[in-house]
Image 1 (cartoon, rainbow, N blue to C red):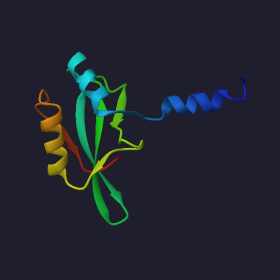
Image 2: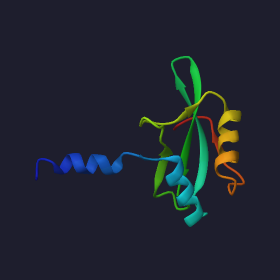
Image 3: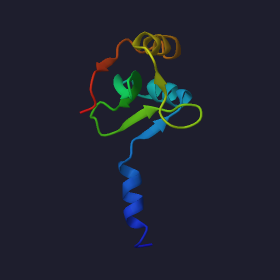
Image 4: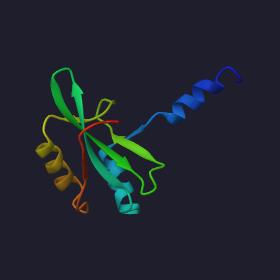
Length: 100
């Protein structure tokens, strides 16, 4: 057990993913979560990811793709349309151009 302790602590620090349905339930239960579109570079290509953060910033999640990993969009307009259609209760989201 002592040998596995560092592995468990690393897992807790890693940002967790939420499915679209889990995010819908979370937003209905607590409207204090903030959505942020984050620009990421993959080689020469610009992609957008959706980050979900609690009001105090202590809990942070990303939107998970169907096959695991982070869901990404090629355009900010597509991400905005996804948010508007999937989570109609969301009135605004932040746009972050770098991941510092």
